[in-house]
Image 1 (cartoon, rainbow, N blue to C red):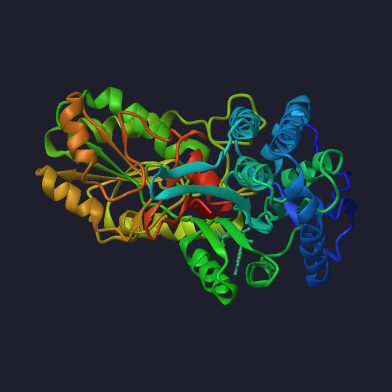
Image 2: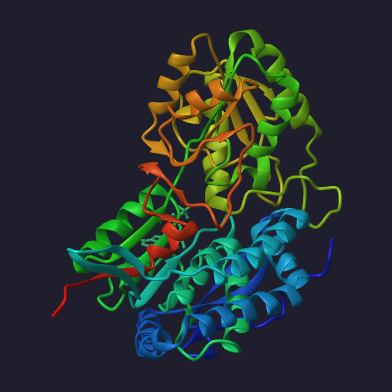
Length: 475
Ligand code: ADP
């Protein structure tokens, strides 16, 4: 165990360049102990409106600031984050529960993402230049962007929205999830010393300000990462003023194992892709389809790996999996465990750990049907169903039966065959022989009900801008 970074520290909202108290507070809990680690300031609607008004007032000057100067400020944020990387990682473990090594990886990824996005550009494009005339496409910021983030990767998902918002000349009102607000507030403290007042505002709620934020007439765009159910509400709230909306929602990603692989080798990679962050990853492997001939060996290896996991407090040096992040998710997973053990065969794990902390054993379930809750719904936890198939066309059809389509993976030695199979999976990303591979330079977007629009890459950056066509002929 380690001393608490959060307790005794005063956390503040960032509104119009000022670090301020909230109108109320919410208790933040360490999911490994259920101990209260901080009284987080909670904004009321007046503070939310003040944050939006500050962002609106700051917009003209920030939009007029050069691209290079804005990029330099984002680079400066990366530098101060790097200087405090250790504190951020510890705070992340404390509020989110993930093992310290995974928290350090998230902080490192956040620094990398800030720098990678700060180096991107969106020059105007010449679409036509001939006897019919000259047509260019120029890009302009939108105005105030609302960024709403979830509790599984509280830091990197905020950074993924903050960097492109500010680089393209928009101003920001960010709202983290109420169970993991502290790293966002610490980012607010760093930003207060870097960005002009109002350019970035960070407010916290108790799951009660999302509606007001996403329907506010002065918000031009909402970028949201969270559940499909809440994403639907965001989309509907945004309709009143036709806001731009980017939604990164749930996934029920399948791993499709082909029959030419070594099941032991592939099982290890799929296990890691399913259990990272205790399975609380939108793009985690959520179900595995394995050919009948490899099924037993594959299941046995997954069970062996699950039994080796060291579940515990993220600060303990031997911990390889932490608790799930919050009580609501813990209860949901306990119900899923009960239904999975009734409908399938549990060959590893299967229980929640009694006592303090939201600990769920890494669980492998075999001989379970497609129509069960564990397979048909997104579990978002360390419980992995393994399904057998005898015909690859049938397996693809079963995978595509989901209304979600975030990502997925295909595992095969014959790369041409694996690519042909990948091309038939209805999702925004399909990895071949790897998984969880995101990169700020590569567009990431969900298919079907997994999202709308996308982030990362030039396409993602463009979503923070309004295109204007400038079409001219000789006068
Ligand atoms: P979960 O159900 O697991 O808490 P959500 O998708 O609801 O996941 O949460 C993701 C983010 O959406 C959080 O920051 C949460 O506070 C926020 N949120 C919750 N309800 C709404 C809403 N009606 N509109 C906008 N954001 C919301």
